Length: 232
Ligand SMILES: O=P(O)(O)O[C@H]1O[C@H](CO)[C@@H](O)[C@H]1O
Ligand SMILES: O=c1cc[nH]c(=O)[nH]1
Image (cartoon, rainbow, N blue to C red; front, side, top):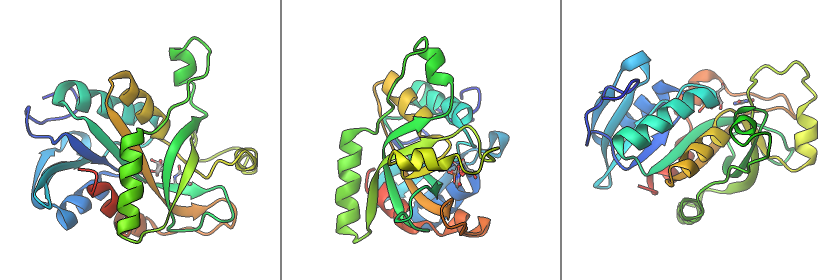
């Protein structure tokens, strides 16, 4: 048992899917796992382990934002020996050709968070996806005929921006979409020499103003989950 995860050693698989929303973790376990067992309810941050095509795999919520995912990633790696951390999240599109329900693989994650500036004494650090997981995800998506886009994403510290036009600067520099955790996950994984990848589904568009409902965000991201499960 760690500070925020009420599991025993061995309860959590080496590969874990990490949605921000704990109810999405429950839905993943109930919809895709064989014999799912709940290993965490502390703070309502549900965590489950089961098997998928016979391989042990886990899913757990991380909460929203870099501080929250960093706490869970640290404990999963250091206290439970997790090796492959795969974020499965929603994101807002920054590009005209990145459409609602598109799947995006985050090759790298820019950020408005100050945490890495603090860590590296004011210098920049470029958080990147694990190449092996990234290539496996590309292959799984191809095999399943699920189109994916890949590139730089923004891990923002703000969901509600003061300046709603601020996305245009990131958009101009090729950033595909915004979410709130990948840069933190990639950095913690790199620090501990384990693997991380963020697979995102576009839930709304800053460009067109379209959005999906929160129920849809909880349950309709099957393509992204199917890709992630092939990485176990
Ligand atoms: O759908 P999840 O995984 O929570 O991800 C996105 O949704 C939340 C904001 O609504 C943030 O956590 C953001 O990163
Ligand atoms: O616009 C969005 C959509 C999902 N997640 C975010 O952080 N922003």
